[in-house]
Amino acid sequence: MFKKEKRKNWRSVQSPFIFDLARHLEAGSRYVDERVVTDEVAFDRVFRDIEKLRADLKRSKESIAVEDYGAGSRVFKGNARKVSKIAKHVLQGKSVARSLWKVLRYWGINTATEGGRKLNVLEMGTSLGITTAYLSASGCHVETWEGCQNTTDLARRNWKELGLEENIVSKVGKFEGLLKSSSGGWDMVFLDGHHDGEATLIYVEQMKSKLGKGGCVLVDDVTWSKGMKMAWRTLLDDPYWNVTVRWRGKGWLFHIDGAVEQHIALSCVFKF
Ligand SMILES: C[S@@+](CC[C@H](N)C(=O)[O-])C[C@H]1O[C@@H](n2cnc3c(N)ncnc32)[C@H](O)[C@@H]1O
Image (cartoon, rainbow, N blue to C red; front, side, top):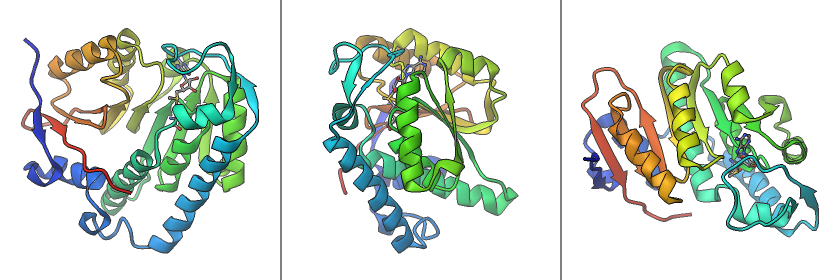
């Protein structure tokens, strides 16, 4: 018997921790912690630059040869890929990227207040580096992994254009190998590649020993395929992840000492 999730919108969440997560993911800027958006003008400039770059990539005439280590694609055939198609079909959209930025900024500000350190974020699946740019703009230490060298080269070129290349640690290799050699200590891991049910379960299991205290995993595309749906149900049943939140086809996994077990499916309020 699989565990059931309770459907809620961000306003109806009772647990303060999940409410804070939900409002930064889904609510408009007036419901967000005011420290998150203090310098709105500066942040708008950053977002504008990133989105301008995304728009340029969508119009790009360039093609690259990619090595695909993922679960295959419903959009691409063969290894030569148009950059414009990658930009249109593979990356997280602006709305999701901005929500992640808000949550990380909120958690980052709280952590800085308590202990004065930056959050460590790992993105598994760099692609063109657009979401990486948002994660980095949130003020966290960001490391990102990508199997394909040509794709990584393009992502690095993009960060240079945005002036972010100094802030991002980018590694090329298969997730399997990079995970084994990583010393971990992640506050948040965004698993955004290799959307295969079995592989996801293996990565998430290994992640348990790689997360810092209170760290979490965000798994993309948990409703993408039968295998991914099954993997999500298996993760819901794992008592280690005592707090889970499904949001826009992704799943947040938390292991919080002493928390009441809760599994929530957050209703989306589309904005932006
Ligand atoms: C969905 S894209 C990442 C999108 C990116 N996070 C964004 O939103 O801007 C997934 C990427 O993960 C890479 N990938 C998939 N499986 C991998 C694996 N097992 N090891 C290394 N890279 C992998 C793919 O090459 C692809 O570029």
